Image (cartoon, rainbow, N blue to C red):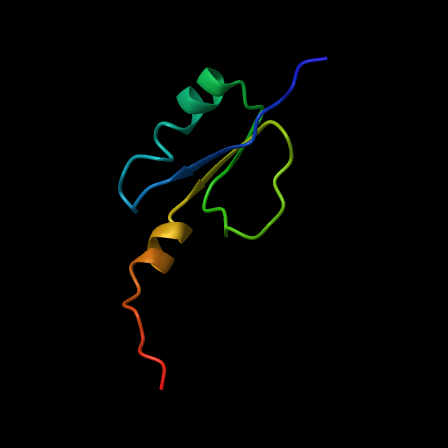
Length: 66
């Protein structure tokens, strides 16, 4: 039995994630593609997930705590 990976691609909007999704899925052996993954939903083995969620969190400025 072959192990199916879960591959997550995090890149900014407009970075051609969707355009290249089929080629990426074929390269990594993924059998399904989730475009605009929310960063929370469970992913099944064999999934290529495309997102920019992590970038939005990192872009937030630090807040001071009183």
